[in-house]
Amino acid sequence: EMARVFAGFNGTALLSLCMAAIDDESGVLFGINAGHPATLLYRNGQLNRLPGEADFGRLGVDLEDREQPFAPMTVFALQPDDVLLTAPRARENATPDFAALAKQQKADASAIFQALTSDANLSDDISLVRVQWDGAKAGSNAEAEQGLTRAREMAAGLTNENSGSAWQPVIDELQKVLQKDRFNRSAMNNLTRLYYRVGDYQQAAILAEQYARHHPDDTEFLLLASVCLYKSGRDDKARDFGERLKVRRPDHIENLQNLIFLANRAGDVLQAQSLEAEIEMIRNIRSQKAGALLN
Image (cartoon, rainbow, N blue to C red; front, top):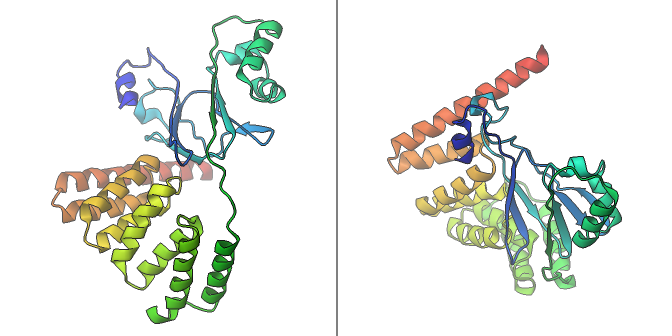
């Protein structure tokens, strides 16, 4: 919406921004970068660009002139003691290598500020944002890991051709894992998929919602959650999960097709048509890019 507003100024007003929200409990970051210098991640003494951060470009550029018409969302799971650093573009005039300075000062905001003001020839204002997540450190659960290993060994000899009863021992083993480690990521993920495989859509939907709540950084899982909820007769929730994925991955065609199906089921013809237009636009953009590469 902000991109549309600023595009109305016909290029006379350009704005860069970095905007994010962090889940206090899980440490998962949800963010958007629009023409702002890359966010830096300081982890275990190493400083790098935040993995997966995509740049939408400055607000104010006509949407039709963009390589991608939708702002990509960054979803990243922070670990305890991770530090994020971000500063405006003015920093590029303040020091030739901000990342090296930040690493040298171990991502300490006060030390970085002192180094900038004492060593650099500042010609503009500068601000610095530092965020540290002090989440609880997860302890290892040896029994749960052993259970996961047993479940993998049981599943190794099975294929899609096997009946639901053949998968039951694997399901039982994963349920035991969750008794020892209630929100174990691997167990919850795989058990949801197994419930879906054997046709137990009610259990698949229940577990899918729990998994998405406790592991919100798993973007691709949202499509499976949407399908599980539809199969269990909860169309509204299925659309909700599809919309969540659309916010993060607006060019995910399979999810857009899923949302079209759900919109038609709800009698929302206008929404279905709008989504079909989005798919057509995405395919045209991809076709143009492919043609440019061939030329």
